[in-house]
Amino acid sequence: MPRLVNRKELVRSVDVKILTDLVLHDVLDSSSDEEDEMLCETDGSSSEDDEEIKIAVVRYFATQSRYLSARVNSPKTKELAYLIFQSDELTFKRNARMTRQAFFAVVDKIGSHIVFRNKSHHEQAPVPDQLMVALSRFGFDGSASSLWTAGSRLGIGEGTVSLYTERVMYALLSLEKTVVTWPNTSERATIKARIEKNQGFPHCLGYVDGSLIGLQEAPSMCGEDYYTRKGSYAINAMIVCDDLKRIRHVLAGFPGCSHDHRVFMYSKLALNPFKYFSGHEYLLADSAYPVSDIIVPTFKKPLANSH
Image (tube, one colour):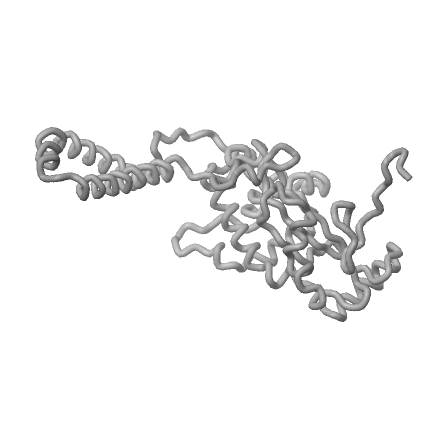
């Protein structure tokens, strides 16, 4: 989960302080009589004014300064990033978390997006460089995905890592409606024939399963609901793919504690199955899903000594 930088946290805390003081001041004014007001004016008006001035000064400098502390220029090199692009296929895949062919296919898809165009005279880094930075964070979790780790490996600052990642995410999400699509009648017939030929399952359209998308920390609201069985915080995403590993449907956003079957029951596939399935079509799933008209789960091994 993204975290606010220190400067933004300071500005937000100051704004909360100012708003709280205004509310309290309004409540006290409405409940006090003239004598109380006179006492407040003679006893505390000077100290309150001083505090308000200090708060105003802090907020001014926080909004006008890009950094709260002095910047220390650490030596950086982009040689590693260069070597990744020049490396063999296996090394490239380990760093990009995908093949070179897939990587540049993604570059072709997002390269013309407006987010990679500048209105200033300073040109952005090439789209492949920005995508590599984002993938270096997507492919890892914990400290391995931190801004500092990615920046130190690829020779850029932490703020630049965050900026590149946001641009890539924005460009990728703009493709969702055209890339993640449910197969039409003709496509379903092709998929079913391919799966029956290669895997032996007639009428099968693909596979469904849940995946946990890790969060850096617990959400501020109902954080305990996002604590998973794996001892971390995450959101649950239901993903359907076909036999060619193409994602056909995604439902994400449920708390990490949610059972895979529960997430599926809230999906449009389960709520309106006749729109997405016909005849005897179904999806294969693991044993977390119960048997239904559109789900065929794996067979559960009976308990020992059971009859």
